[in-house]
Image (cartoon, rainbow, N blue to C red; front, side):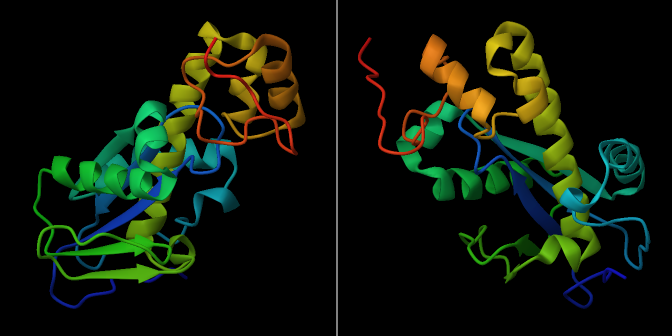
Length: 201
C-alpha cells in the first residue's frame, strides 16, 4: 500500500521523470498534487503496470488530482546540459505549471535541485512508496510514450513506437544503417560498445 503523503499539513507535489535512458527524444517529468487523505490502492510505479492500466490511471489521476502538470526538456537541451540536469529542469518546468502552488516537493530518486525555497525530500524508489510520485511517474511515462509514438510516424525506421527511444538492438541497428535523426541525443553513446558516429555530416 502506497502512502498518501510524506509531509504533514503541507500541500506537497510528487515528481518523477521518464526517458532518462533513451537515445532519442525529450525527457518528460510530471508533478502531481493529490487531495489530502487521497487513497487509490491501484496506484503504483508505472514500470510495474501494464500499458492499458497506465492509461486508465492517467485519466483517473487527471480527474482526481488537485493539480497536475508535465514538463519537457528537449534532446538538444539534454546535450547542452547533461541528462541529470535536464531531468531536474523538466521537474521544475512541471512544478512551474501547477495551478495550485505546492508547499513541499517529494521526488523519486536521490537528486534534486531546490525549487524556490520549498522543503523537499528525495526518496529512492519513491514511485513505489508514495501515491503522488507514482501518479507523476504514470503521467510522465504515458505522455512521453505518446510523444515517441508521434515521432515514429516521422521516423519509422527506428521503431520508436515499440522501443520509445530506448537502446534496443533494432534501434541501434537503424542508427548504423540510417544515421541519426534530429531527435537523437548526440551526447549519448548511440551505437554502444566502442563505435562512434560523426555528427559533422
